[in-house]
Image 1 (cartoon, helix red, strand yellow):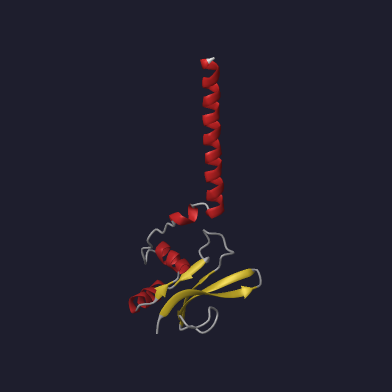
Image 2: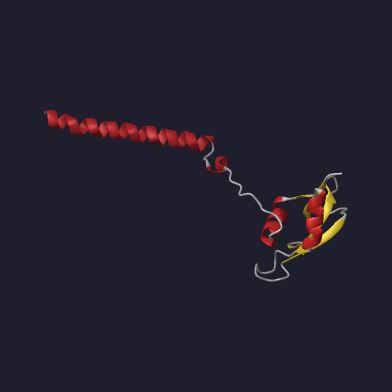
Amino acid sequence: MALKIRLARGGAKKRPFYRIVIADTRSPRDGRFIEKIGTFNPLLPKDHKERMVLDLERAKHWLSVGALPTDRVERFLDAAGLLKRPAKANPVKAKPKAKAQERLAAAAAAAEEAKAAAEAAAEAPAEA
């Protein structure tokens, strides 16, 4: 059985509240879970002590058993000093898409032609 440490959403509409739970990967997000190890309330200010409550001993136990945290929970565990989260960078995400690259290439070609025409015009009166 593959285990995940993940967030299960609760709370009312537009008022999210999350439980940090240990669950089987096949169970639904808000469905059955094995153990609740904490809570996360994104509506509280970042410096509020009850924004994120986590039982570090139980989290450490489940990590040692082989439970894999989701990306958001991995951030929480890194902030708590329990886990080292590697920096992730996606250089492809920053690149413009195909049509934008075509427009940039066309603009560069037009600028090059305009520069060549300006140089030719500047040389023509000098010869006369």
